[in-house]
Length: 131
Image 1: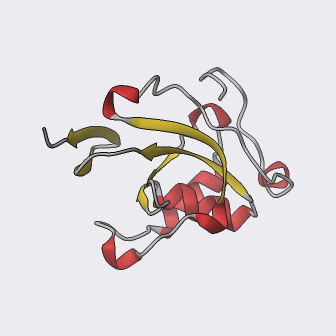
Image 2: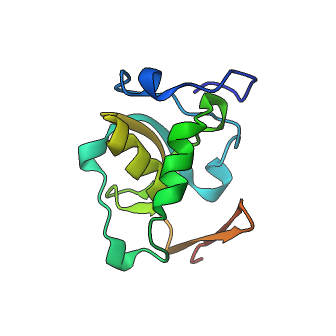
């Protein structure tokens, strides 16, 4: 994974030629949450059920990503060990729209429950593990 740096925004003409865009690892090591960072997960293996997701996709957010894509801010999605999407529905929709074949993902290992709470543009991660 590449580190967050000052790369320039990429235009749509560049985006649509990519099959894989390496994500930023600026979130650091999340192994303390029992999450493992996996590279190049095939997009067609990622399962997304909008009925089980807490919020719906906002098309203007996906369009904003297209118009203002900054590789240093492209974070991995979050999936469980069965590749069910837990966080990153806009990134997944964006990736499918531009034709990516692979995405990086944080894969939640063994734990009973994981909650992803979004607050004013930031993400607060909370893991509840049974003892």
